[in-house]
Image (cartoon, rainbow, N blue to C red; front, side, top):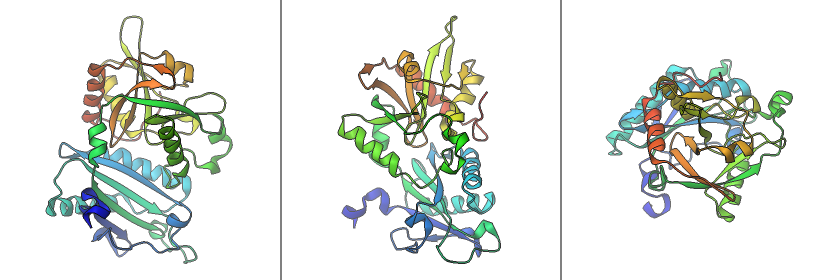
Length: 318
């Protein structure tokens, strides 16, 4: 069993939420749970969020709940009220610790699907889908690679910077279960000797990485650090990690910028990072054939900013 699942997955705890159990009930995630006609599995028709327990604290809970609600609105998927998610998370964390899973470096994933194909929708749209919380230890490989410099390749995402505005049915700014393209990009990167990917639009604007947000550091004329991230107007996800870092950086007197950013801007930056909930911040040492100097002090500062956890909701521009 251990060889099949890995030690981290054996410690997994699942909490299901439904109308009869609005505060959630514990289930075994290693046993069958989803109907084969659930639209989350057969069409990827669902949304999710992943957050981290670090240093004994669940990080960025409110920004993740806000972004889940935003994705639900964009996709028109009904989700339980916020208090149900909070109660289910608390129940899962308590169970996780009871089973000896520890209280640190825990991945907490919230998932909502549109529900089972062909079944009549609930009269209350908040309970029409399938909902659960999954808690697992963060894989050792992810923790071992935190803060390590990475190489990145730029890949064309296949749409222009106005696509989100012109075609809202593409759901570009929702965090959906449909990650096939993102995973294909990772495979392409690995096959060509890169650790990660940064997407750009067909008209030359930088977007995001498949599972993280792009951060650039430059310095103003008086030497003040300035952090810049791509604009949300292109349809990228509002980054919760980026939001926390920006909130703390602003309090520390740094300048902030919100794009638009071009690949040439990336290559002209002093330093670059990818930021995400589980991997935290990853300094970039190479983009395609362009090498960058990494700075341990700035990376440590960004990590400190992230741990301050100041953002109370998903970040807005400007």
